[in-house]
Amino acid sequence: MSATLNAEAIDRYRFPAADCSRIPYGMYRDPDIYALEQERIFRGPIWNFLALEDEIPNPGDFRLVEVGDTPVIVDRARDGSLHAMVNRCSHRGSIVQRATHGNAKTHVCCYHQWSFDLTGNLVGVPFQKGVKGVGGLPADFDKSCHALRKLRVESLNGAIFGTFSDDTPPLREYLGPVFTHQVERLFNRKLRILGYQRQRIFGNWKLYTDNLRDPNHGGLLHMFQITFGIARLNATGGAKLDADGKHNLSWAAQGGRAGNAEDPGKDYGDTGRGDMNIKLRDPSLLRYHKEFPDDLTLAVTSLFANAALQQIGNTLAVRQIRTRSADEFEIVSTFFGYEDDDEAMQRHRLRKANLAGPAGLVSMEDGEAVELVHRAIVRDGQDHSVVEFGGRGPVRDQENLISDVPMRGFWMYYCKLMGIPTGETAS
Amino acid sequence: MSTITPELYVRVQSFFEEYGRLLDEDRLETWVELFTEDARYEIVSRENHEQGLPLSLMLCDSRDMLHDRIYSLREANIYNIHTDCHVIGTARILHENGVLSAVAPYSLFQSTQEGETRLFSVGRYHLTFAETGGRLSISRLRVVTDTGAILTLLATPI
Ligand code: FES
Ligand SMILES: [Fe+2]
Image 1 (cartoon, helix red, strand yellow):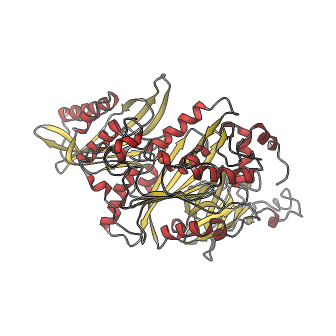
Image 2 (cartoon, each protein chain N blue to C red):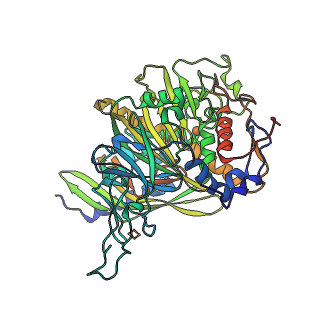
Image 3 (cartoon, chains in turn purple, yellow):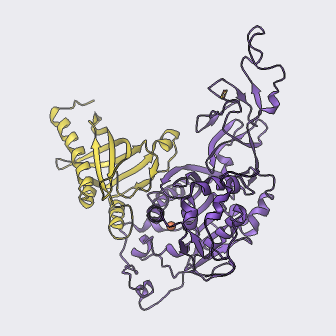
């Protein structure tokens, strides 16, 4: 895409430090920045997570998703191939497929009944030749020029990704070895879809991608595990990044290293939020049945820009971020287990889902935190947040959780795609 | 099919009145006592309910688990500071094979400290009662919410 109306919006804000240890607040509130993101991030050279193959196992199966704020149909054609196309009629712009999911032979627009095959090609136009030679479209109207706008699609172990850009490198290359492994780790065999959760948050979507890349808040904002003496921030954990720093894996492992052994509350700087060691009446919720070859009990993989893969113990899900405006986004989570789960394992996963999502015992706080920030940064777009836990300078893997370095990795890549110049040094 | 006496009708409707009032008055610990020890309480979106998908938004399959959730809300969780207002419609009561159950529609409004109100959730209660010592309690409550897209977050029970 060429010049954009709002491209000058990026000149309004200054990133004083090249390592993105300062983020101007205006980046979260400016509607022009938001519009530019749709073009340069979501429709830029990135792979967006779309859906899971096991959600559309049969020919004709489809689901509606969103890439940024663009409505997209993901479906499986007769020959089993996967397709994604913008859900906007090439006639006059109506939503074509209205059902959120289902099975269809063609996608038919209700407005004037144009129909599109499962690859997005226009196949039917009622009254194209008019009635008895009167009316209709011009004789030179060429249906092949009026397909739905198509995305390029790649699937990795059943996780379907789509891109608008011809410049996006192949999916595995885009993910890099660490994150290719994370996708393969989670999607290692046929899934059973357990259900969906949706959450509307009234804040900027990047406050959520920041939150996903800030392991430091885990043991400070989310106090469930600490209150009940199950985990500590100073436990074994860390963060992994890809070469660009754009993706992040926040992980914690079984076992755990103690922080201040005599007085665990001390590390909390007298905030009154140290270990309380109160016992749950029903601790079965916290049991972990080891099911991966590694020791990770928590693995939240954030893929630039719209996805997070979640393993919290045995509760597994993939979250898709759908932007609505600079001030609102939705998280759509697809929870799953594996087809070969027995009844007990499925029940365990379903109970354990209490930990995650909008009502999650260890996650509900994120919705509140995002909105608190969004509300407070309404003015002073040139002021900025401070991102220095884990140090300044180049981003690299973190060996502990007291870090927000992965956040800087996101922003450095984001600035690159947005064409935002960043400062020379950390201020 | 047992008949629903006027007395039973009033008992069930008053039960729902008490249910909503305890939540609205933030008497969550007392609300938990409306449930039997082995009760199941879950909030499930209409989306999952209609597709037969088992995932809930909140699931407690014992009163202990409900206690834990309320305790966690009190001591550990941070969520939007708000007041709830439940408006519970007239229940449809079924009394079959000795099992008393009811379905009632609800609207749940949330208000901020500054007095700004939003419609937070609408849906239906599907409730199965147990009767012990002349007192009704909940043995199973499935809240099917039409508002599957949760606004901000879901902390206090519906
Ligand atoms: S807008 Fe779709 S057929 Fe006219
Ligand atoms: Fe969080």
